[in-house]
View 1 (cartoon, one colour):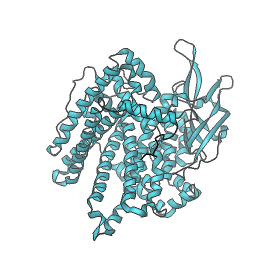
View 2: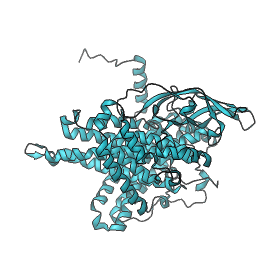
View 3: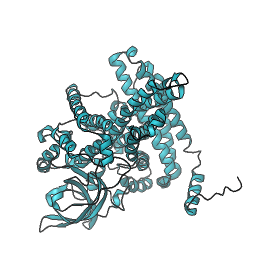
View 4: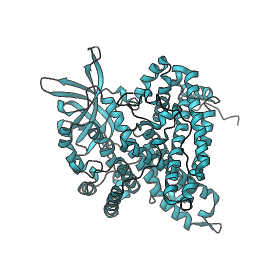
Length: 579
């Protein structure tokens, strides 16, 4: 086994192996950090109550200088920076919880802080040398420097490997010369520190030069120019601009990580950043639920409060089930990050997908529950809806991430067919599945289709998880065997397989959380947690079943033909005169 190989719960799931030791018992935050986090949240809440006006930020399209200055002075720019460099030193779990809290109060502020910390300087934390960390982290923690992550380009969005920005090494002068541009960069107009990805020629395996991506630390004073601020649908308080690099000279010591290994740096930053985005998205929904619940308690129609109507009850219950399961996923995955010995790449993508979609659907339902009020600008629902829409696009679109999950999952099984394995390697690399997980990690393990015993109150949830985990494994193998290397083109089936595994991870995370809670508090004190777990598991296994059935029986051919015809026509072509 490679010394770098790390176990992955979800990748093993595709191979028919249930690594229950990774998910049981459910993780708990360190008590000291929990207390520190509570104090940090209280400080932020007081500051926000006094200084953050969400409507003003949205109307003016910027976060006021006094708010930014306050965030810096109170240390919120260095939440995840180790204490020795001047930060709070929160764990990944603590940081995600903090972004969830901030995302509820103001999504624009959460995005500025997340763009700075989740991805802006995350590469420095993960790959920086000690010299680089000492030079930059104190300034980043204090807010003297604000960070931005610079990958997307006009011609390279989801296809991040297709970037055109170039870096040319001038060995005599000891600098890289960067030329190119970046698009839609969060914090682009206010940042001083940029994690930039560019292509350069590096020695290949046979000694011949090859064009590879490298990562660089670039600062504003090196000549980085920002374009105009984008006029966005939501998150109007955050800065989003194009960036231009015109013969920008970067010292060789500002190379981040190894030459030619920048794509791995970029993807691992995003793997980590997606959990912060998931937390912030879920925090927005939790926040907006509160005024919606107050409205349905007070508003009366037909001599009843809205909360007494069953269709309203269903909306509230469904949101609660979805939030409970999604936060269970997020904080299990963030613990994987904190452990450091677990490959969490698939789980972080799953959490980002589930959280952003649960938040979008939930905010929409909150608006629906309050009726016409939700459509009025003086109420917060429209603001949170506009701010939340881009989260399904940020940091990898949810469609691309579903492809990533499916192709990464079947990749390990496809190694049995070497030609297929080679065919998959290219597209998987393009989606950022550059992890150290190795298929040989599973060799010699006892293959199990069952998880450990859980409390009897969760027996049905456990049994359904085991049954549908096994069926998903078989379905994935049939997918490989039937389509061979062509599976990379079967995106609708990839989506179904990914959705099945997302639901399975939600099931196991929720089962673990509630089982651990029952052991601590007793069954009689966990009535609603048990109810939420069983409700989610019951809904989830039915979705898994439907997705697996549709791997073989579906309308994919017809959907492709209809779409091709509409694209060819250029508009809706069916006449209505005879109707």
